[in-house]
Image 1 (cartoon, rainbow, N blue to C red):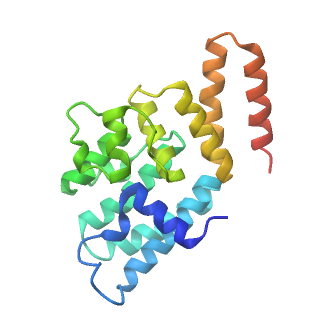
Image 2 (image 1 turned 120 degrees about the vertical axis):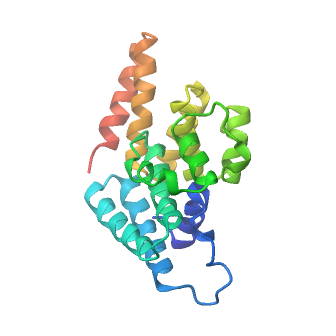
Length: 216
């Protein structure tokens, strides 16, 4: 099970939520910030393990807490956390941020473009630190955080730049963390590629893993 410190680090890796403007210097952060962060933590746990209903409920609470500030950038940042976690499981639907894009910051729009595979003309310097080298190298090398690695893999796949070793790394990362939803998504990618290559033995092996991971 993921601990709170781990989840805080994961949130930073996804979208740097914990450094929202105006919050860093106060000894006691405002209640909305703690509520939003706690609910985003819950959303990530539930989404990655495949509990959609619980994840949706947690995110609704996080968005409500963020919206209490009346700030577009704060709500956009929460939406980007959701977009990033979904991209880790190859779900690129991101309507919540799209509705706020015109009021978002340049860095937020750059991160959304990165997740969506729109890398042409993208200023990598605007991205969260762990993702900058992904754009320039086209590789997961150097992305240490497990969730950030899966987010980066999702972005690489969407951009059409992912390699078979990085697909394997995504599978291994999701498997080692016990994150059922992204594991099933990435095993599906492996299965499609094995099928396209005519590798019946690999297809059968991957199908058995999918069946096992789908249990429970």
